[in-house]
Image (tube, rainbow, N blue to C red; front, side, top):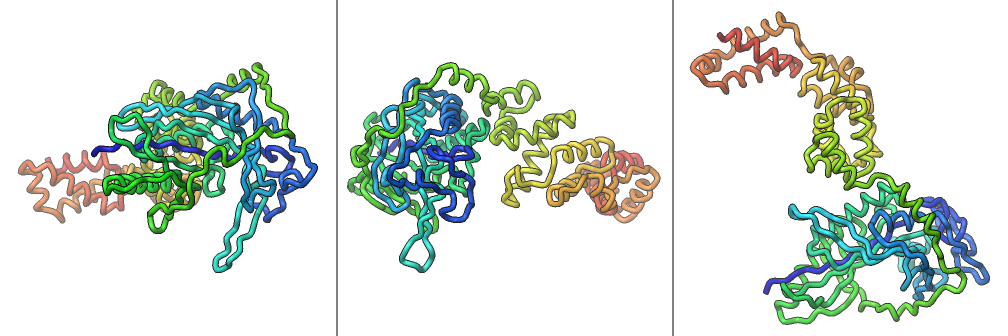
Length: 475
């Protein structure tokens, strides 16, 4: 039997506010445990929460960027459950009246544009964090994160493969970074993901039994866990078994999902309106103002790169996938005239080194002006393309200017005709067979002789002049 995979994602995103959503405590990451807390976020008796307007603004901004309808009227609810990192024993969230709903984003999958629906975007507070010390039977509770503002972005079950889920998450992260509502640092918990997956016979419109996988810490983990769960569910059905609705966790080391508990239903949380918080009636002029001030989003920037700079759609898509990368590229082309040449160096050399070193754009020492200057030096014939790669790596690793590196390492290109003729004569004398092969019509022999000249000059000879001189001397 052929099966169709059905996936929906729930993405939790910490908003980039300076203070928490219902109190004035700092949201800064990395403080000493339990130092960014007050009676409000600790849930002490008698305290009253006050809604952070900036968090509401960021939630609206995200909803608009995700093509959602913004609610004129929404409210906060209490989601009741007991867990050690939730001091009030309830979480302030939104249930039936979220701040935004009915949105979508588009992804490119298999050469086609796929629209993934977004059911809702709602605002809520984060819980704390449990610290599990190795070898001990107890856990420690850090409540610094309690009350940090979150938006939860819930997709429609429109995703049909682990690959599409990965593409959706990357696009979502890119949009959120472009509008600057979150840094989306998964390693700091700023972006977290739960996935829902089921399978059904191909052609069926009835959903299969859903399994949720909780607290996935990377996009790679999302993809791998979905691939595993897809196989597991098919095997269960093909072996005559029955799937159960449950929550599972991903074991990164073993590469498997493990059952945690049966899936909770909404009634298990006993939602009811929070009596301490007034409903939010949003001023439409304010919403329109936020919409008017939205920055250029990834899709619009990609389209502009194709039209304005003449880049291939693929290049434009890669360069605009990250706002920081796109900003680096734009600053570079403001200093250098050839957008495609810059695109090639950024996508091949720079991104290659970033992957090799495990760095993000914000972490590298290389400056856009330095790349532009290196390209100008190449154009002037001071260095060859081969030497430029060596200079680029040095710039990337040290942050030094290209002129400094060229001077320190003596990398100036040899363009003196007399000097090159002497080296060419030496190469010709040392390689009589290749000389004869070239004279007999074997063009590849010339390439070998060029290579020998580049070897003699340690790559510093002007390649164009080398070709011309050898051809002239060989008749």
